[in-house]
Length: 361
Image (cartoon, rainbow, N blue to C red; front, side):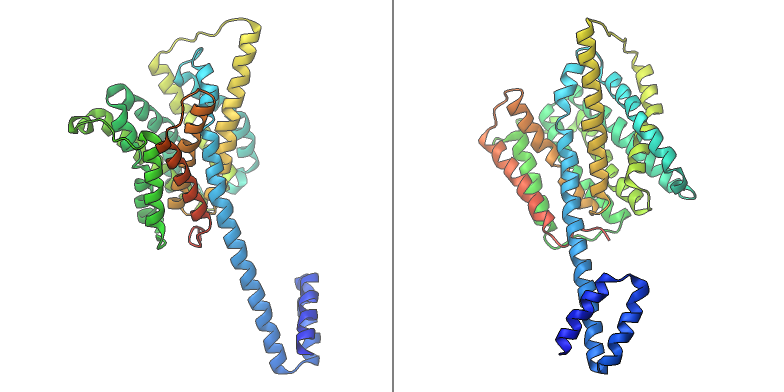
C-alpha cells in the first residue's frame, strides 16, 4: 500500500507545477503515517539527486564532444586557405575573415549588450584581449615565424607542450583539480600527437636546434594558445554567454589585425574572370563561417561545461583531423605510426567523455 501511494505521488508530483506541489504533499500526508511521509520525501530527494547527476554527466559528455567537434572544423581550414593563398597573403585572409565575422558579431553584441552591464571589469577585458589578440593573432604570427627561422621538427615538437601550459594555468588561475586518471589521459594524448607528427621515427635534430629563436617563438605560441583556453573558461565562469565571448573575440581582434596588415605592407592582387572572383568569394565565406564562426561557437559551448584541462586535450582533434585531410584530399599517405596516433587521440577523447571529473562546476 505505501509503495503504491508513493508511486502515485511521484506521478502526480511530476505533473503539477511548483504551486501545486504543496497541496499534493499535504493531501498525501493526511492519508499516510509519519514514517510513510518520511519515505516519500526520501524518494523525491533521491530522484532529484539522480536527475541532477544524470544531467551533469550528460552535460560533461556533450561538452567534451562539442570542443572536439569545434577543433575538428579547424582541421578543414586548409581546404579553403590553400586556394585563397593564391590571391591573398595570410594577413589579408585573416583580416577579411574577421570583417565577415563582424556581420555576425555586431548584431549578437547588440542583442546581448544588456548582459554585459557591470561585468566589463579589468580582469574580463584583459582576458578578452588575451584570447583575441594573444590566441588569435599573436600566437599565429609567432608560430608562422618559427617555421621561417629554424627546424620544423623542433617547432612541431615544442608546440606539443600546449596542453601542459593550459593545465598549469587552469590549476593556478581557475583552481581546477586534476582527476585521478588525468595523467594517464595526458600521456596518451601527447603520445598520440607525437605519433601524428613524427610516426615511430625520432625527430632528426640536435641540441642546437632546441636553442634557436624559432623554438622560443614556438613555446610562446603554445603558451598563448594554452592560455586562451584557460582565459575563455574564465570568461564563461563570469556568466558571459558563449555567443558573446565568441563575438567579442572576433571584434576585438580587428584593430590589431588592421595594424598588422598596414605594417606588413602586403599589396592587394585581386583579379581574374567573374568565375574566379565568385570562387574566391565563396571560399572566403566558407572559410569565415565554418572553420571560423561555427567552430568557435561549438568550442565555447563545450568549454562552458568542461574543465579547461580536459578541453585543451579535446582540442587535439584538430591535428588528428588535419592528418586525415592531408591524406584524403592532398594525397599524403598515412604511416602506421600516424594511424596509431590517430587512434590514441580519439580513444583518449572517448575515455575523457566517460570520466565523472570532466564537468566544470
